[in-house]
Image 1 (tube, rainbow over the protein chains, first blue to last red):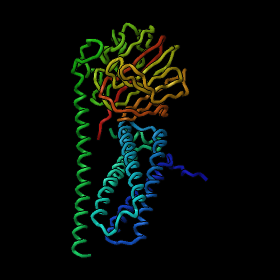
Image 2: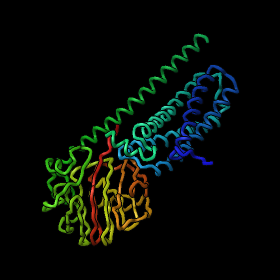
Image 3: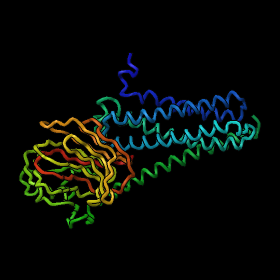
Length: 160
Length: 247
């Protein structure tokens, strides 16, 4: 049994949905936990950040490998370059953020809503990085056809 | 949910929306600015700040060398041309006298006398893709596709020397190789060499296969062309430069 389905050009497209889903849900649970002060909810939120960050790191490195296995048009190269840069910023942000959240887990007083909201405001920046990275990745596939086997170059040339 | 909680929720929601909106518009502004810069660069060919010689880079001359689009430059020549270089290029190292050329249809055979020579398109470009097909005929030496060329001591390149590809840059005369690999060289057939310089990412392809991939700071826009450092002859065709535009 093949680990990567035959329709997939590489493992990267199978990985990317994990950080997107997990980190978005983490932020959502974080917002909920401002008002619903339950330990299980706060612990679940941290778990979401942790696994979402692991997913982002995995997606970043599989993406680096994938970038050398495709043959994009020149115009797609620029989008791919930006996608890679934004992905790196996202990984750096969530790695630092998640570590700090775990380390200072007990310092973040759930009763202090102002601090919790301030921390959430920082998370929104991370969410912006994540969304921007995903947007560029989506463009690569659906606008330029990158990774769609031999259709990529042909499709993007037709667009020009 | 009490009144205080509702106020917090509303403030947080509005803050989130405003922040995301600000980031999005900032990102778009950057891209628009970048695009405008690219267009500005497109008009650079009327400038006469050509390094190392006093070639007159006339705007009309540039139009003749391009494929009709400001985003692509193609080397156009014919066997009736006395000088196949001057329409499209100017020499920044050496001169046309260092290279004998023979045109046959859409192909040209270049025979270098061993003196290093470099010819570049008249336009300056930033993010750029370059492609060329070549076939070696006993040529011994290095063929480089150069971009972000400022002068002989400041430029970026992908070079092929036999089956060895180097990707790197020269800054103030100091060479920095980002990546180097060997590839399977087909001596009896055309080899397509592609170079991509997108932001801080640089790649060299043979056909559809990525051979070299490196990263470095983005340099100012510069000239794009070809450097020949070796002796003997080789054939080339389909030299094309594509400007990458931010969207």
